[in-house]
Image (cartoon, rainbow over all chains, first blue to last red; front, side, top):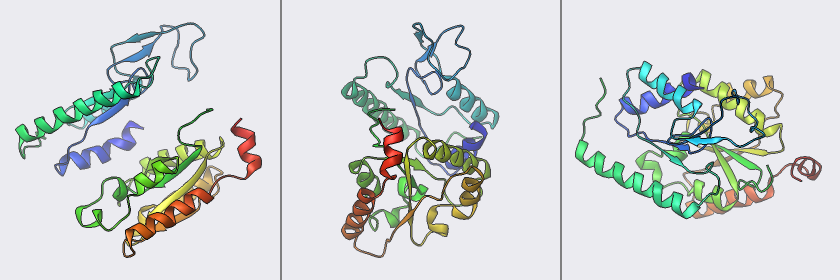
Length: 119
Length: 139
């Protein structure tokens, strides 16, 4: 999947578009700031019977995608997560969080000017 | 799967409707807004060009939805190559995965946008799987 989507992201970056990554925090695959972890889970697509830990780390799909982008010599894509998989979901708080992230990107883009930072 | 906010219905949508080029931006209805209001989820297609691997991944996703009780509809844009739907490549990929071709609704940029929005809304509202299929999956 990472090899399938990376060329599209690379194309956007090379034509000067801004690309951001929004994952699902708490997800074992698409978590960005947080993922779910349990040592004996082993990658199976079902939830473990017992509880699992929320840890401050990338999910496995995001890890793979970022590794593929790095392999192509691309800078890290600014990333955040929509906290859908963190237990009790607070949509209003998640929305505020995402808006804050997007606002910070606008500020960064203005400061960066036209420079894409690509090799 | 109960209580899925997408209402068990998904739309395949061309890249140009998600990242519209400026000249098109005003000519088309707000397709994403219409889809959201109609309770559809969105599966974005890539822009024109070769995307063999990505289209295979997308065909896998469509197959997964189609084989598990979701209704899938494609919303194309007239005037784009293949209406923005990559049908020439996607259709055989779907056939290979045992998926019936999703019906297509084509939005026209040369027609009044409000009228096109109403036409799309009506099509979205009238489309779903047969009741028997809905009962099988959506209990």
